[in-house]
Length: 151
Image (cartoon, rainbow, N blue to C red; front, top):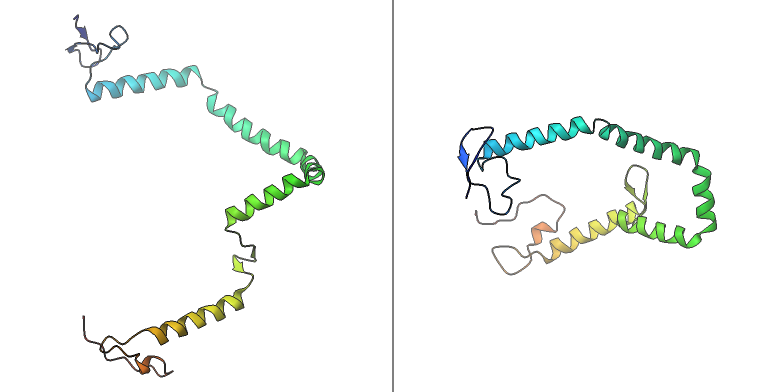
């Protein structure tokens, strides 16, 4: 096997058998990093306007939407099945619940009463650690600590 000289570390190396003629750099990480850096720099010099094109595409999409707002309105008016599917997708994405205001729930009072009911049930069903009976002190409105052993 013929050995080659690495242009970065000037060391000799045996090229990989799968890419013999194309391998120009040895396997050292530093040399590979320099090769990649050089390749990327060469590509970006060759394609200077690449990133600018993508910015223009985004701006043109926004301009198209602004100019053709009536088109989307008309399309939705003439395609009710599209509107139905779109609304279903949006509801699934949002978790199925419509929000009003600043993220507030529509049934806030109902939820609050459900939470109170759950708390009451937990207190009723929570046994005292000292006994198998329910601790009566927890159900009273007074803040009397339940006598529990220290962990």
